[in-house]
Image 1 (cartoon, helix red, strand yellow):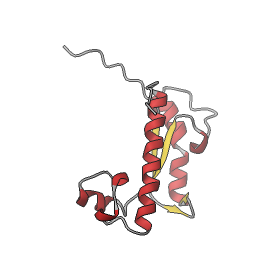
Image 2: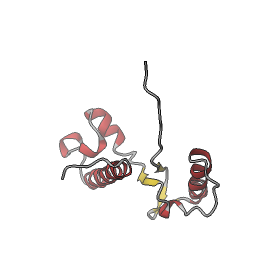
Image 3: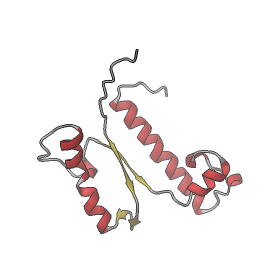
Length: 122
């Protein structure tokens, strides 16, 4: 017999498909602006009123860049994007992208652990 499935959502993650000058392109930005209200009303059964934008929404666990240039390298190396090294082809700009990717996913993992009240050893 399976235990009762008591799901408790802890938040959402936004994937930025296209970024120009460190901000989402306008078309994606308009779509992204609807996420907090939709999450509140459809997932949390809230009223969807007075919801802050994604950047200030406590339900937004992270806003991740699309590391599409790292994906094929990670697939070839059979490892996560944030563990790529020069031997895997992560050279020059890719090396700094790997570090940024590592930081982004570490922060996401910490945000999830914090919301779930899971202690992370230092």
